[in-house]
Image (cartoon, rainbow, N blue to C red; front, side, top):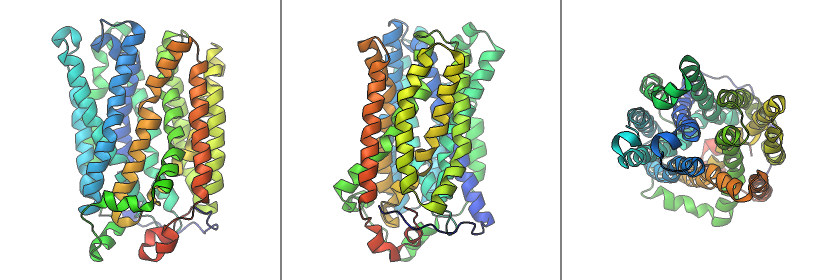
Length: 447
């Protein structure tokens, strides 16, 4: 991908485009909420509720394994929803994904624990977590495409960034809900049954999201595909024509954001409480603060990308993510709460630089008629390699080495791979430059 010349921003945004931005943001916030409610409770609660016969370390590893199941399911969701999103449209798939996530999350809130039904408890937990993963696999890509393909001239990165805000915003909403419930009840009550409340609230939130989502129109890019009779029978196979080298470097460029992000969002909760003696509410509040900063800065960085291009910004952000990831655990290892807060805020400042535009970068890799399938393949495979396995890998490295040094080495390795891949990715001439005239969404790409 080559750096495009700066383009003027400030094109008028009509009511329909605003509605789409709101609908995609609300959906990803709700899906992010459901996903992170699971991640937080997996780090803090599930070892005692669903794996009581295991030691604390092994029980936490088992809980993180169920967390990883959701990521293993995301490529399946991406492939299924991507196929139908490229064949019947973006809107229908996004409605289905939202319903699936809401129903699965609500049911997690009523699953009996191990003491009540034995092995069926973790079994049901894994099944519902798998459904969550399938739903999120369809949601993350589809929401980005729907918003980006409705974007006014010169605002593609800004609009593609709205769904990206759902990740930190959902985390904030999830953690605030957990903080509220833990404040209103004793630790014993929360561990016993209070953790179910945030899951049960999911259905109410999803119904609110559906009201907004059902009012939006279909993507203009997909409408053009239908009008031009460009719908293909097997869009995933067609998307692979982009070429293995470009697919690989695009995938690797995006994995550091997920891996380092889940080290600080999920792994730090169990590590900080079990190994460093931090208070549970303090760490949840730190993550919430960091996610708030992260969410707030996404519109700023997407506006920068629209005005000046993405290349230099993404590479600089990859460097900053690597450096801050290396500093994160040593700072919280001090046991000093002020330095711990600084560590989390640092992550909140750095995460949005690359995360804000990576969805648009991946989407711009593919032409409109196979964009959902191709983008899902990259994004959801990256979610496994970069996100789902990160808490488990970090815990194994911590247990093997007896210190956080192994986890920091993991952060260095994966951050370096993403940085080098990003440099290579931006040096490749995009196939879209040759085909730009066939898709208005590609003509305005800010690469």
